Amino acid sequence: MKPARVLIFVLLAALGCPWQMQAQPQPRLQISGALTAGEPATLHLAGSGLAGSEKATLFLFGPGGAIKREVQRGDIPLAGDELRVAGRYLVILDGRRAAFFVHAADPGQIAFLAHPSRVPAAEANAVLGAAFLFDRYQNLVLAPLPITFRLAAESGGAAIERSVITAHGAAGVLMDAGHRSGPAHFSASAGALRADRVVEQVAADPCSLRFHAGRADDGNILVQTEPIRDCSGNAVPDGAIVTFVSLDSAGRSTVDARIKHGYAQAELPASNSATLSVAAGVVLGNQIQWKGNP
Amino acid sequence: MSPHEPSPGVLSRILTGGSASLRLGALALAVALLAILVVPRLLRASLPEPLKSFDISTAAPRAVEENTAVAIERDYAHAWQSLAAALENNRSEQLDAGFAGAALAHFQQAIRSQQETGLSRRIVDHGHKVQVIFYSRDGSALQATDAADLEIQYRDGSRLLSSERIEEHYLVLLTPAENSWKVRSLEEIEAH
Image (cartoon, rainbow over all chains, first blue to last red; front, side, top):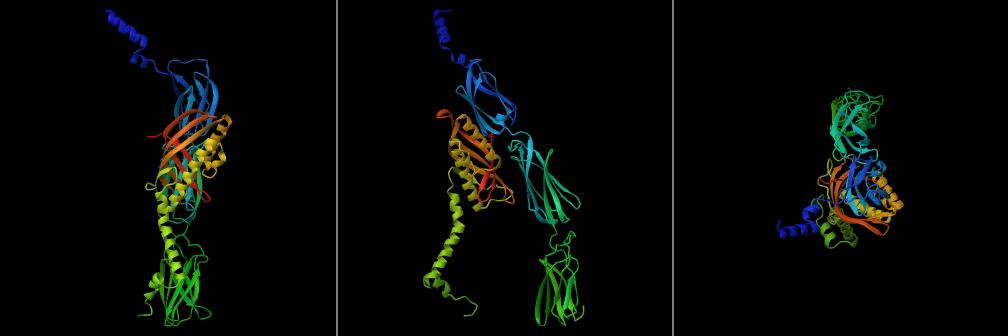
């Protein structure tokens, strides 16, 4: 080898080549473990230049805590309790720092919003359910998971069930109300987790309205409906208002009556010739031509 | 003129002449109408610090009303201000006004452990870009993503341990309380 080449080689060896420096990486912080909320993990310095038994101060900042403690260099265990909150953690050791994410654990609870608490029977898209999945440390579970929503009337009939995959930890559904009036159990479940609410299904508006007329003891016209039901056959609840109208040569008379025990009745002023009609909400009933007799 | 037709002089009397109380009443009515229609939009045009944007166009299944959006912007901005102050001063009571549920419990725990170890965090908030992704039909829950531009200084006593400026991504769940919206969950998520 020529002396000049030997000199260059020696100089490079003494100064250290760039590719030689890259071949010896600086120590860096690494984290291993499930990185799941509540699960332990291990922190270690990777690369060359480790000083095995020396002590150092570990700082760990997370969304639910901050830790400062003396540790032995090398593998440093982090307890599950120190990683209970999902989110970004920053660890600082020996002036080096590293960030890592802890994800939520498996679902441990389900938050369920049901709306409304009372709904007309058979109404389309009337019942809203929204569910949020949290793990047992109250972290929102962001992994997409199926949630099953179920609406079943207490009085029987087919239950309505729908499964929705969560997005950002939440799932929502719009369901048709059942046909039967009475309490309905609305539930959201994910695996073994389940939350229940009760939605009261009430009869909707009357479906058809029929009434008959007769002479009252005092000479007035006694009008009475047949039992009033919605289109699903549910009795319209007491208290709903039915309007009776009489139209004769003297003018128009109107009487409002509340449904009681499933039907409504009222007295209209006496008349020898009148057109009688009935209405409840937007529903019109039959008409009767009154000629002094039914 | 028919007796049912309005007198043409009434309006002109209000505007030009008439009694002073009538004119004052008309003016008050106009101001009230203007306030109802314009103020929410003006308030939305100038977002409270540290919000940079608050996008409600992607809310589903229900749209967020302008007035509701203004209230949420105000309360969410205030929650971040109080969080920054609480983490810096290690005073968890500053969280009460803006946080509830899991978020409150998590940050209270964080501050407790900071107090025990003498650590603290100083957040220099450079702004948030919030996008509403879910607003429940009954208005009882709102979920949003938040891209926050934060400078965080980590301290041990008065010693600065480390400082970083990062874009943090959060998934936020807000629910209405008695007279304000509160952050119920504030979870950092990895950017995709």
